[in-house]
Length: 384
Image (cartoon, rainbow, N blue to C red):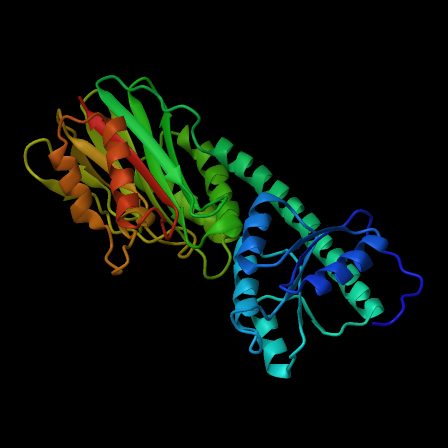
């Protein structure tokens, strides 16, 4: 081991060192502490995982060879993978006395940040640790910034969704959305536009995450002013489509369903712009899909939309949802599907809108083992 010259390192950096040889741990601890590091040592790979779950470190220095396998580095490589599963940004510097190009490449492939051969040169080891700590701290800063930005985006998106579902005489309404990432591309709204008319709409932007959320906010911004014009659903979708065609990026689009419920005569007038057909589950005779066969928004500026209407009877339930709900797949790649939605609604005829919403979301989550593959939203309208 060579002597060390002038050396600067990050103040109070924390290092976790793993090696099954006590003399090696003693030498490393003496070296690192003399240069200002806070050092914690362990002798078993399993203990590394335990310590990382309990405390934070700036870098991990691990041996690749332990008592189970002293030449191939297999136990150490497995440890590198475990560390990466715990923290993808934590720098990991690996050491071995039986180094080879193949072993170094495999360690890097599994997530090691750098590689040191025993016997190490003090200056080289300290330089590598300093470099990795600086890189790790930069990643942490970037991660915190991204987290803060995503939190702000999440807050903005939450304000775009209705904070309170309006009450409609002789009806119950419940709604929920669950983005697959921090923010998502699903949109729904329920708005009273007159004493007797209530708008229910739902949309789904192609894609996920922040890009989809940005386009979703554009949909909401374009839609809100149109709500108060008293436009028929087909005309509102036509105007909304023209606006979105001017701002939607190539290859992106929005599926959208828009309906106006008139509580005077229980008439629902709707237009479907390429969205999953909502299901009208009748109190006594099966279910009906509400599909007006219109094109998605943002792609065809001259598209002429059509509208349809249906009467809501006592006990009927209207289910609006995005494809993240019905296309949620289990381990066998089997989708949750419309049929399960209908069956659950029919089996729970007396359920309130809120209860049915919870039943459907829970069933879909159970089906996909608790992990939606896409943003999932649901609006339930129940006629009393």
